[in-house]
Image (tube, rainbow, N blue to C red; front, side, top):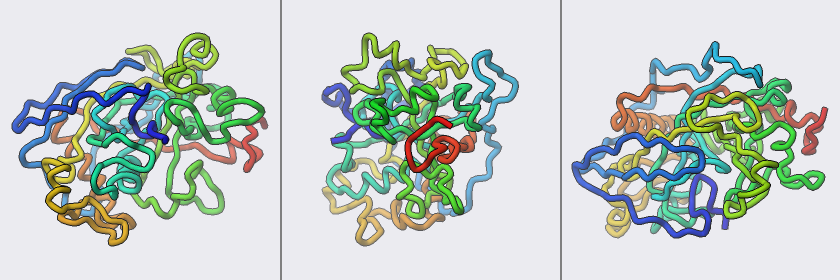
Length: 357
């Protein structure tokens, strides 16, 4: 069973104790995460959660652009980006390397399409551990010179199974995910807005184009060490042959093959709060359901109604931003980057996985 996508049980460990649920609890401080280091942040369930906004109009903000001008690197001519990534997560805590991440719309699509229709446990087909929260990471990225020379700041989204890179094109000429050797452990991105006449950035999950209508939804990948191995095998010589793209704590990404991105966990919100319930278990036992795919509605809940309506999806996106803003009012609003990954540039002999020009 694939349980690493968006965070799940790793290293064969059992789940840690559930986060403490306290009415009127003090919000936890922001938590910093050194690459590969786990930091636990308590989850707080407020007695009266904020209801989703009742507007379908996209937010008007003074969000900071993702590109940071003027900070150059001796290793790569690519620009520096800073933005938030999000991960749908259980009560477990660990770093996001060798995992898939998302922006808000991408995280909600994952929850909507894979998780919330399972009535009795908020888990999914590829996730056996219950999802309880949406985590926020503040991320900086810079492309390797090899990738930037192809005209891109972001590479293909690599998929992972318990830390092992499994796609796309997992075995080409004996190499596991050969793009990592060719372009280095560059951050990958994928969009779902349709391109006319070509795939553009709609790969490798192009089957969801037209079905995922969350405005601006993006998925990302963060290549870590030893991508050819499972989590428990990622040590020793493979860390030298297959370095992580994660920079040392406090470093600005240079675009070198061991420093293409940095990250810091800066908060999370509870999914119960987002749905305006206090306990998923109690809600279900009282007869409620978050979402029914047959009716396209919930029962005793309307938050997830209308998966195919872009306006309803935008309301849910706005609700996530509003809840983070309420919980962390001092955090800046950062715009999503433009996902400039292009299948035709990345794979010049498409539809094969060959990378050489």
